[in-house]
Length: 431
View 1 (cartoon, rainbow, N blue to C red):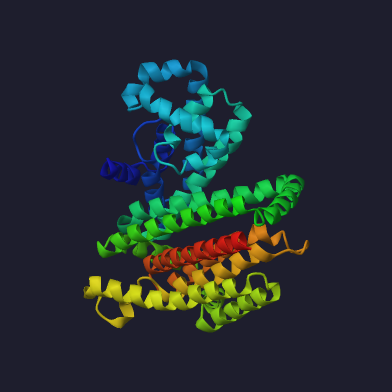
View 2: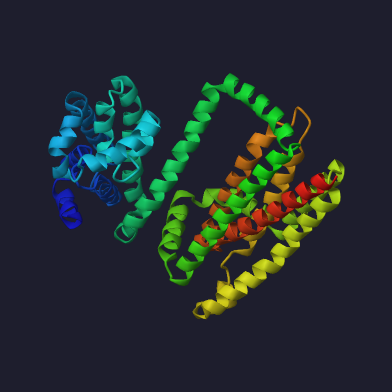
């Protein structure tokens, strides 16, 4: 099917990109993403026009999802009962997807285009659910536009490497675009409901201060930390298995290629600045600032200082042990230059910045600074994301090594945070 589509695109390029998107959104089992990305490849070759390709891709998607909405709105559930089996979508599968759609509703119409197996039926569900057309159209058409732009542009960026990377790049880029859209939606909602959010933050900060002074809630907090620790630990096991089975090579190749294409030489200064933030010298400065905050706060000073030392010094020893273990398990990697799993800088960055952010969130009490409690964790995650890009940009680290550094580091960090809060709880009960 894929080979046939590619052959037809070469012969009827503009017509096919329009028809395939239209038919896919009517729930036919064909790949609009493959068609759009290959059209982008033809754009790279100069055989198709970039903007016209996007226009037809978006137009096909809009007409397709609009038709499916109208069909669903007119015929409702009877349509699924009678004809669903012909498109591998009987009543059983409908019930499962309907449950998902009823839960998330129109909020995820934009994202649905990037979720295989969901976008095909989004229009039908919107119609069957009697979602108002204007509400449906606003979100669905934005999603269609982003979907078309993303995959035509992806093919153009991949260029001569399209045949090698388009399957894996589509998967990873879809995840990335979905994350970006969620981030944009958060910003939009923050601006739209600014007053409500301010009121909520004030109430949250007030309750947060009380939260840490109640023993029962402290126990719940420790349980949450332990749950995150378990999640990180399971992630490290999965990542380690994929590394030892050579299943991360595709991820590394795609990420390196896309980042070099998306960020040209003009970004070099910015990327150098991001790398500086994870140098040993700068991490030492952040560690010093952390101890200064502990000293100024003076609350549980000895306990928090010991756990901070355990986190950082223990982390230095642990990363050496981990690197040696993985080199022993996979000695075929050869030279010392390849001893990068997990990446040391990423590992230590999570520990140092993570503990610093935790202490600030735990102890910020001044009214004019308390709102930082909400935003600091997000700033921390964004910083890790950008530093990861910088490492891959200069081709000095593999993305898999960076991710391993983050997950192993987070596992050790949360283990120490669990111990910190356990000892604090015991100390409070004794007092």
